Image (tube, rainbow, N blue to C red):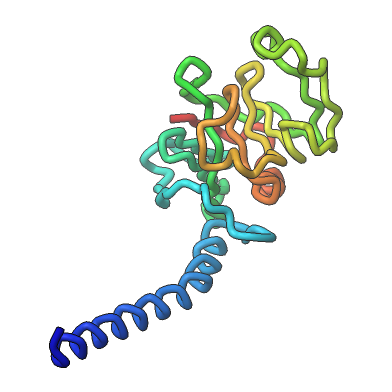
Length: 200
């Protein structure tokens, strides 16, 4: 190898390393900025399994935003919220149903808001998992519904929190849409009974 070739390779390695350092230094700031734009920043370490998704316009999905509007996009695994006066917009990563058989799409609304909801497995869940408990009290770290739940107009379908943060951004639920507990707390405070919901 000639001296000229060695110098050329050293220059390329130096430039590549400098570029890598610049990008890695910018990533924490970019992550913080993105989490703020999407709603309340998450406490603790960065979650690596959140899906990539984009902001949407409510006009493409709703005639109006009366009582507020929630769009759960099961493909991009994201939940969008617009307030009635359209001054508040939030975008949250979510978990979605495991498969199409468990998935329901269409229009409904929030019929009940519950703090620290009690969880009871459905009949089909009991068949598949006979060892599961009959119920789990609200507030328990083992409760699959997390700290808050928005009950929808369809039986057994909810938008709720989860203590298992690995589920967010994945196909991991038995039909419901799950959010980080920090995010369901924020959404719970913004939503009212009667808020429109669309699952697509």
